[in-house]
Length: 527
Image (cartoon, rainbow, N blue to C red; front, side):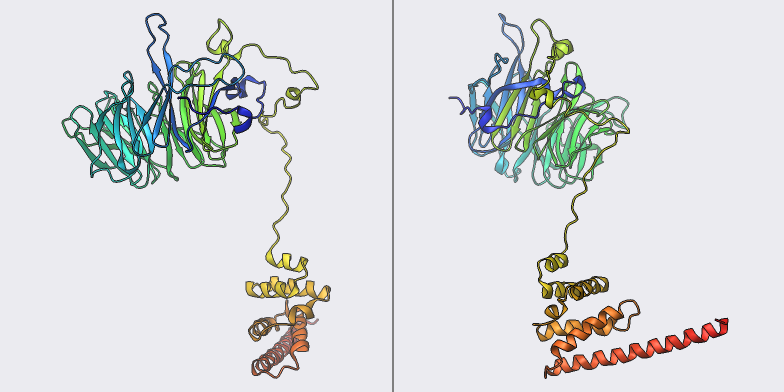
């Protein structure tokens, strides 16, 4: 039974046109979709390519694609090459169904065993050919959703991490299992490799993990029936770890944290950092394309970027209309890329090969000359970056209006004065008072107030009526208040007027005293 097929025009907007420059068209060489498909009604959680050996009649290796979504892992066996410019309908070769949604899976190299982790602590090893369950690592030791899975290099030990920061190891042969503490927060990513430690002269085999506390840790497994992992080195980042990617034969590791992706060497030293992302990086792949290492990242905003892994210079950018869930590039030249989107669509694209050519020469091919008057000519160079020292024109955004300004512009004078008074900022209140005085709206702003709101005016007037810088404007506010509420008989209003009069007298006395002092000083100076 095949998964439902949809055309590229109805579900997915095409990526923006790519520049004709070879330095910015790596992703642009992934042309028309090989296939588009929806995976059930749930969001895909992971995509992964797998290489299998060819037959005696056709010894070329085959590329299989696995996609997880909900409680199912779907396999597309021997994904064919692109035969035309239109999307090809793909048939699902096998479907593996589990009792709970699958949140992470890893394929064992060589024999197709599937390690699947899911909600409620599900950890199972399934035969990819017969679909039978070989081992089930489910007990009271696993108390959280499994978010990361991994095989050791020898294929005997499985490793898993949960959303509570705990890790689980299991022996596929004996069925024994145990757990250990990885860190705080959700575990995102587990990869095996060899690592250079300060305590060892030669690289040590082990595995790397990333967790929600922003710490990347490298672990070594002990020997014997209970190989409890031991942390041999770690590195801390400022944001939670979102993914970890590592090529099988590579000495570098790609780690996602916040809006950046970091390339680490075997000693966890940062040797490269991606920049320019405004959204959180959700997935990434450290891939070898035409013999060169590339970093490919996807964000919540649907943007995919490709960087040169050596210099971390931006090579290409493309965008989709939905957030990126997973990315994987097939091994053996990187001719096809698979992208899983949050809207439930999985896209596979292939780079066009020239007949009889391969590698870098086949990837470039012949470029068509863009003729004037065409859409391709109009958008040429749109993805080119600015040269060093180029003048960049920016349009300043309009300043955001404050609540006081909005009230004045909408002729809500009473609201404007009340809002200004409650900021307790004398400059704000005096500015509003002057504006309302000029608009002949100060009487309107003062009128219609409750006793508590009139008290706010009295408190402000009493505090600043004698101020040499603001006294004149505050006097205008006091004058209008007395004019509006002078006939009121309430005790609170009369008490407020009494305090204002006392403050005015004090202010006049201070001004007279200050004038006498200044006159004496001027006399002594002979002015």
